[in-house]
Image 1: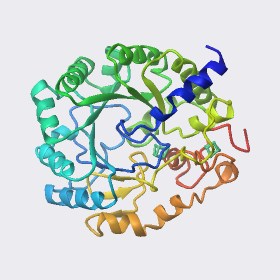
Image 2 (image 1 turned 90 degrees about the horizontal axis):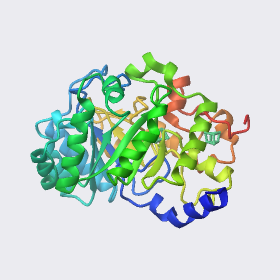
Image 3 (image 1 turned 60 degrees about the vertical axis):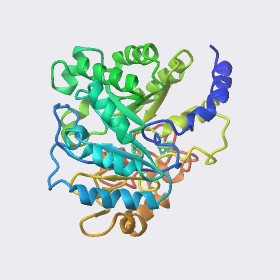
Image 4 (image 1 turned 180 degrees about the horizontal axis):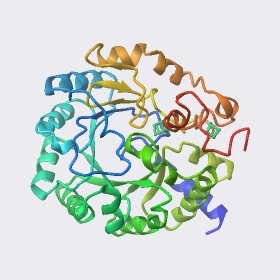
Amino acid sequence: MSSEELKSWIAIHKDEIFANDAVGTGCFSYLPGEVIWAVTKRCNLQCKHCSIAEMSGEELSTEEGFGIIEDAAKLGPVKFGFTGGEPLLRKDIYDLIEYAASFDMQVVMATNGTLITNDVAKRLKKAGLERAAMSIDGIGSLHDEFRGVNGAFKDALRGLKACEEEGVAVQLFTTVTRTNYGEIPKIIKLADDLKLWRIYLIYLIAMGRGKEISEVCLSTDENMKFFDDMANKQKEAKTWLKPICNPQYWAYLKDAGLLDREEGLEFTGCTAGITRFHIFPNGDVTPCAYLPAKAGNIRESSFLEIVQNSEMFKALRARALKGQCATCKYKRMCGGCRSRAYAISGDYLAEDPVCSLGDRG
Ligand code: SF4
Ligand code: SF4
């Protein structure tokens, strides 16, 4: 397929990019907004890149969780997501899902999938879970190695199939590194074979345990090649390939003349702290799962007060960015990954250095 053909292919499918049918809005769209609660840091796996395992503080109670859900519903029909650790390790997870689903919100969950049997999937569906995202970082032993437990791949596939059989739609989360780069075509084939509709290809943000493997993060040049590879792969893949922690993918498509959408009209780039809010197990509220800078804690202020009054969120809403992101023509449609800027420089408003599309490019 030529570039022109790819361009018209994207034009034909463009509304699907914005369809509200994914776990996560994907670092590019403000709507419908997202509140994600990491309900526990406990997990039955030991992933090499885990961002949460070393965090401290006591888990929020069921009642505190109900309070977050009520506040989130006041923001409008947002997506409410449960994640972890492994959210299924919380005994009250079905009650929490059921309560969230009783409001006008789409309820989704990110899970490693290994604890899901047909009975579990049935209970999740009955509680009101609409969609699940499952992490697959390689095929077979490479996934097991990354996730730190033998058999994790086999168990995740069983969980995935159980969800699909019981009516909970599944998408994949794949962390992209130098180590598993060669596995990505196989994961795309797996998604196509299973007729899954989305893969979120997540750039590894070196935080938590991930700091110990920061050498496997893609460099700027490798990341641009990754964009080339994904745009080419999209010509044949049926599943949508969406780079995450990489809002400059949409700027890249625009730069390559592959996207006709007007800048800033729909692609909004990084949503962290604008319409995406994350709550860690200890109640810390942050702009994104990969950005552990605290805007407040729900044991000190209500979730809504933090969302409205946090200086951090105000600065992110204003896109008060620095370096190449401040002057970039794609500032509004991209804004750089604020988590990556923070992980690399300690400043969530700093330029995203893994990009060659800005003034320095
Ligand atoms: S901080 Fe990065 S991962 Fe989070 S919403 Fe922004 S682009 Fe996406
Ligand atoms: S310089 Fe910043 S705003 Fe511009 S495309 Fe790159 S990451 Fe996005």
